[in-house]
Image (cartoon, rainbow, N blue to C red; front, top):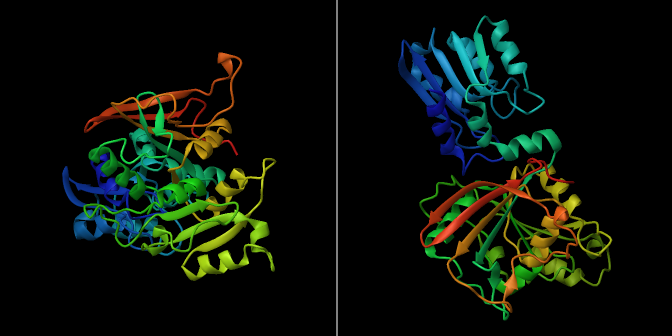
Length: 372
């Protein structure tokens, strides 16, 4: 039953940000009498949907829920109270909620009401549903996922910058799903100027329920044109720029005004020793904005900086069966190493075929915590 609850949780993977993905199944005398998933932030949680479907059959039933029921009044009432009122006999949780407001408290409330509670059922699979949410709850930082489309020799564009399209149509459709699952899609100003990307989800088959991931541009010099296509799309665009550009009388004042008039939100970020936006401050700001997973679609410079600084939690590479040659642009600009021991290592999580291309999913071998 927990495996079915995991499947149900996937129904909210595109639409319930910033909340975790949760599925619930109510079982009475060996028969499923109710099921539900959390579909949209601010709306009923999975347990409530399942209890409504079960009705009176919930009394004395077993509840299988992927995440510990939440135990405080937020935008919705506590699910613990709903389960207690319904009279369920046992609750099986896949994992405890990493939110410190809930962690263990939901279980405590249920047990205090005489409900038998078991946790840890299929926990590794359950935790995979909400790696970004878990990381943000524990560290205040989002999970950083870098996506790259490359040739077999690791090139992402020709020397003249042409890159459309290295990968095939099915790989590009898969990227739409990656975007839909992310809280935010982030790029650098060089990519924004070269490609004029939309950074939105355009696949009509993906049920977003009214949301689009936040679009984020790292733009130290505030060079993003007010006519950029992403500013004409539904959803929000956040431009992170040098804090100096937001000071009264700054040279960029006219550009700032034009971007804001076009609908962009512009905020100031401190600079690092190289005069670039401080990436640690970028992640902290996105964590404050309740971003769980940030998908980075950027050029070699920003990708290289993230890899070099140990800020990549997951790296997804789509390899196309072609070779672009030595003059083409590499997927990441990185400093030269003197010893093999200095190499940053990743663990292969998945390898699959997407149309004519291969998809690799890698995670940092040291764990999933962003190095901030």
